[in-house]
Length: 384
Image 1 (cartoon, rainbow, N blue to C red):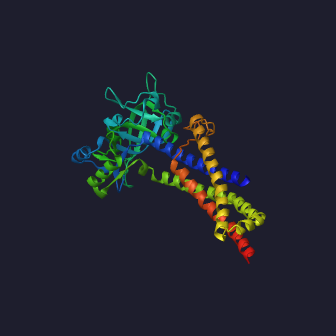
Image 2: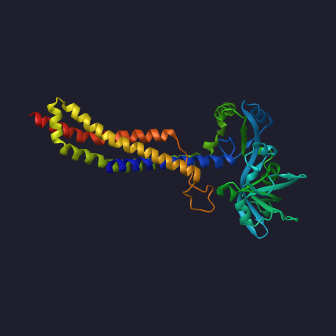
Image 3: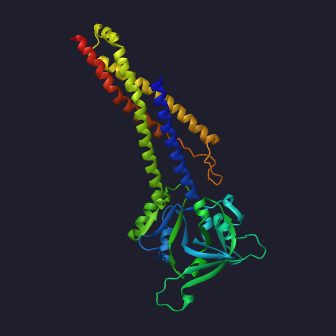
């Protein structure tokens, strides 16, 4: 029973930890997807590219493409009254709202609008608002002063040519996730175009696909259309390093817990060893009844599988119930008031259960081989 309990706890721990990593990955997907486009087109080299009307029209006519938004994005220095901050400023085309990536529920103050009566407005993250002390709903609003450092030669004497300065009114505040809230300000494309003096240059194009269309197939079509000079990135490829790191952590955690499962399964080894010593008389009776050495080995192997099987099934059931309760009630919290999720995110996947069951089966087989060999040797000694 101690061996069964040890295997059960190890199995449950494996299932729970794998489900938590699945939940974290899914949470990252949902958070990034709410701000990042389905497909992002950037230059393979350099931070910008020339966008021609012909190229834009070809992309729009690609099968599966619904909306193409032009984007100019770069770092800028922003002042508001006595406060200042370096932010990631993103100029978006007029059809950005058609992408439907920032729901109304995520607008904390003001409105999600970039122009009112031809006057440009900025929509900023909640963290930027607090850092600068921006007041959005003032009757006489104070503008954001935006500065961008120009790429000029070191010999330039005219200080005014070193940077470009423009003003824009704060119009709204969004709250999505801390990384975006503390760094991003969204502005109209023509404002950013004027600030950076980009004319027909763009840093990226953001694509929304049609409903029911496979975005990966659309991505492949765009790659064939644009060639090697452009990078066409899906959701995961836009944060490739982040997801790779998460999967590596999941793999190493799985290996560490598998090692603990092996250590816990040592109880099975000693249980079978003691059983082989204790059941000498029973082995003699079995051999007298005609049992061969192979039959004796099978008996002890099956005993090891029985202990591991009961423990594994109990662990899978316990781990599954724990994960379902966490998904429904979130009784284990993240421990932070500003956390995106109140409880640890959990997502149960059948493949994880099958992998854990396979690993436990292999471990139990390897652990049971030695005691089974010892029991069969006892049989051979008796025959002699």
